[in-house]
View 1 (tube, rainbow, N blue to C red):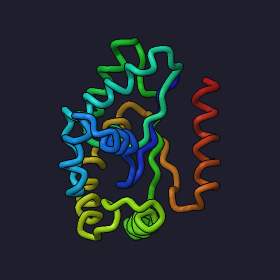
View 2: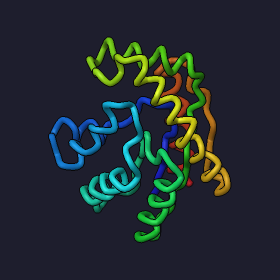
View 3: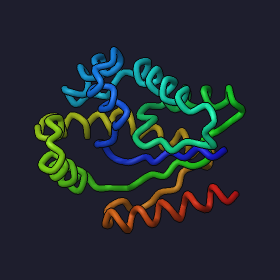
View 4: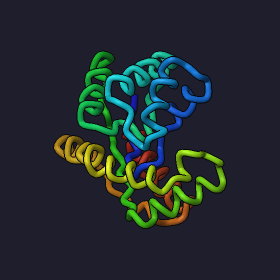
Length: 173
């Protein structure tokens, strides 16, 4: 089984949004933090991960985008995978400038109608949270020699192709 993490700038969080839309207890709790542009606390995030992981007991691996966002979440992920004798095989870090992050989130706010992307102050808080907490996950996985850094400022198709090639190598191993 292969487990890959795609690690990029602020803006990911589909599982949180799913729970928010479905008005689950976890989603309603997460919404309190998301609406302020804050990271959802580790304990709540890990509960969601466990719940999502349990939905696919026969999966031959997983691709995580936007998780883990803190070192405690990375440690929890390693423990969860270890219960099944699994490990994170690859962490893909998409290197993107703050300027491009702001542009992409602003564009997404216009095209997706996501209210949390429309407020400049919220975006700035998310970027600040990224540098305060999330960026520290990279050294955690670098110590395990699992990080592949990629330029994330190209076109969507170009970045997708590079990620596909990187993942194909991991899956082939």
